[in-house]
Length: 243
Image (cartoon, rainbow, N blue to C red; front, side, top):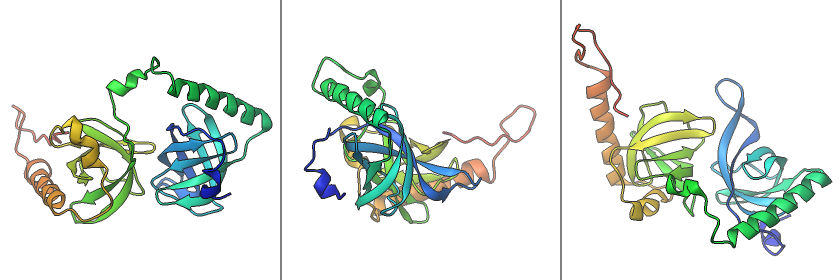
């Protein structure tokens, strides 16, 4: 089925976070590579999923969603930054998914039900952004969630901890790896009202962000990695990554 045809069918427009793996995509240890993802429209038969790595029509997908559990299937159509996943589930699983969707739809329409995690993190309406590296290279990425101090993203690249980069227009450093991506701590706190606008930028060269990333990389190289001075009373060298 095509995305256009699915948009005419009965379904629930809902954002549910999860992760997925594509057939024949592996990490450096030979294990299936996981990426973060988020649904945008779901029925008991198929769903549109926003993703960092789209894949091709026919590719097998293994996924897991917090509200739906494990779901397998294949890609039947693609759109920029997403795909249509045809679900391969049993009748019992389809009925359970239908009941879960009915409950989630009621929850969406009930303003009295609020997710307490919303106070701790922000899930952007547009999950797609770009990574700008110190060498000027640009990569697309998927924003898992964000706050005024940092952001978690998923991408087809996995920079080393300590790597300076920009996510959209926000500059910071990689501070933690996740099974589905990595976390970046901003070099300075961001304005909450401008955060989504600064993060959700299409893949493009950004001279201001590039200059700030290069400066951060230069500062890191001189302060933390190369000619570090003794910091302990006993004279031993201590290398400190300020993250």
